[in-house]
Structures are given as C-alpha cells and as structure tokens.
Image 1: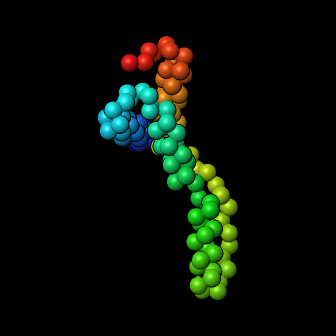
Image 2: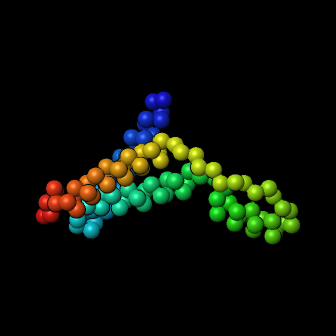
Image 3: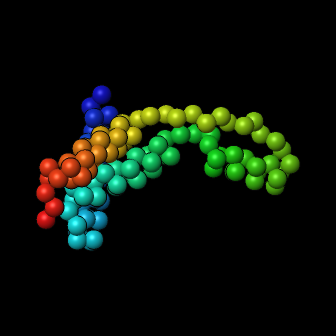
Length: 109
C-alpha cells in the first residue's frame, strides 16, 4: 500500500514540476495552465494504462501481413492505477483553480 501512495505522490510531484517549468517558459502563472496540463497528463496516463487499443491492432495487423499468421485480437481494457489517480487529482485541482480564475475570484495580474 505504501508503494501505491508513493507512486501517486511521485506522479503529482512530476506533473507539478513539469507544469511549473512550462509556466516559467511561457511567463504565465502556474495556476493558469494547471488545468490544461492536467488534461494532457490525464490523457497520456489513460492512453498508456490501457491495452488492446488502436496501436495493438495496428501492430497485430502488421505482424499478420508480414508472417501470414492471424493472431487473436486483444480487446481494449482500461487498467486504472495510481498514476492515473494522481493525474486525475492534479486535473481536478487545476479545474478548481481554472473556475476561480474565470469567475475573477482569483484576480488577474
């Protein structure tokens, strides 16, 4: 259980660091891009947490074309893990900040 929490914390720390570096590079506030980077991180973790999707079908078709053997198709299955959970938490925190920015509760600079 401690390993899972560690993975979640590492995911949050890595996403925070990458977003902080991007905000410095573009000279905007961290909370202004937190939601958008959360969307990207969540999409990437969901993409890499699944199996049997479009990429697997393409690879199976390529191998079948090269060898002549038809392999059994693997159905798509989503396997959520603590990295996905960390990305969703980061996304939700960013969503709260984004809503606060849009409603001018957090004033623009």
